[in-house]
Length: 156
Image 1 (tube, rainbow, N blue to C red):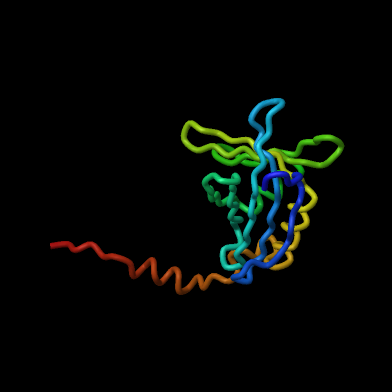
Image 2 (cartoon, rainbow, N blue to C red):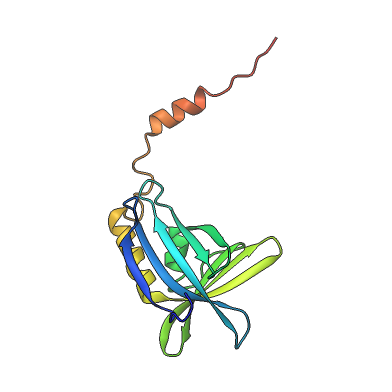
């Protein structure tokens, strides 16, 4: 990642056949200090309500977050999320960006990312599984039967 410019991205299909977006973003440390971060967004059509985001700093650990796909999509145009995950639009140097805040326990990290490549990639995920169809593949009869046949309490 060293020397890479933010916004360099590649939309591709991961080795498992699922859509993936690799995006160089920045962690905002303070008003003047930024840190390059590689963000890998992954979408699984079998779990279409969530996007997995792996964040990696060169030479550092990788962190995996699962973020609601609708929350991520809404946050590109308006404030979205509460608590651990928040995202909202921003503008930086005449380009469309968004701020993503991730909070875990008493630690928070703020990231800035380019909106166009993420919006395009998210639109592709909605082509694969349209909004509102996320639960259409569930066999509700089997799921309900499994719940009803779960562990039984013994009464003497």
